[in-house]
Length: 218
Length: 218
Image 1 (cartoon, each protein chain N blue to C red):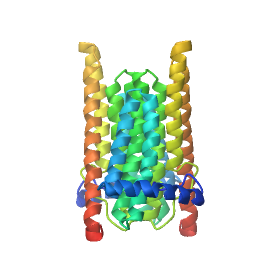
Image 2 (cartoon, chains in turn blue, green):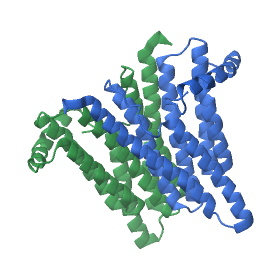
Image 3 (cartoon, helix red, strand yellow):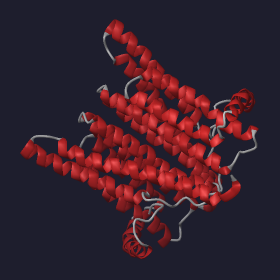
Image 4 (cartoon, chains in turn orange, cyan):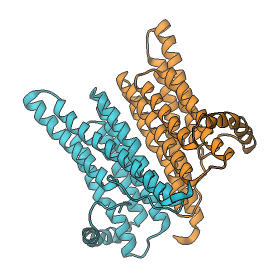
């Protein structure tokens, strides 16, 4: 489970309840929570490679699949009483690295398709998305809170996955009917642009939030 | 001044001594340390745009110039007794966002030049470089230390700036004598690949370091 909540606490508790039996099943196969974290990261790397190869649909499905898989490490740790600070550290580090790598993969896929604007949007999205997670960790390292903002990771992952899937669908339609990549690239560009803008807003929100918490210190 | 040290503490103290009069001069112009931080970030954004436009030499020089400029905010804050937790937070957030944006700019420049491998290397470098700074902040949020590793930010900035400058020089030589982009792209690829590999190693070093500090907790 990532750092932030996509949904209400009640829905999250229900999702956790659903994740628990699957997680325990994976645990019975001999997998530890940290092993699940690493497997999830490797799966996300495959999604990044798929995006780089312009297999947009596969990339989108893998991003969703390993976004869901990311619930199981935390669920197994809680169910077996093995939750640890190291597990949380490893999970959040690999989650955010994986997200950046998928955006890098999308940039490569856009470059290979000759869609340079897509490379720019993916790059800016990666820069601000990674700064969103940074601001929270940095705020917490100063004893403050940094968990505000419109675009925590689950929201970004959903937008990215939807953009990748739509890019693929439009590509197919365009190839069949119109013979152009234009619409597929537009969907992907909208998703990447949305991630970039919402993440930049979230970084500013967190900077303001930290400033507010420090009050009159400066 | 960034988070980490490129040089020994003695050399750093000497550099700080050199930065102090310049910083105080900027302060007399009415600039606050936080204003210098924001100006440095905007300058780094210009470097990112230059890289995207394939003005490699300009990008490299701007990265070095604003890397040096980054000393003045901290120097002014110390000299005037206005150092604050918010200033440190703003500085490290914008420093790392700027670095990611320059790498995004390099990716765009490579894409526009049809050098897709350069896009991949820039993307992977950005993913791991941003995770390097993340692991430190996350470790510190857990009350641990995360300041180990072969590739803190100043080292990465120097490699990036040198790569950008060399890309430009070789490009010129190649255009004049050989008519090929090959060598310029090779220098840039080496620099980006070096940042990617050293940053990935640093992330692993910091994960191991955190694991070690937690000892037998898990």
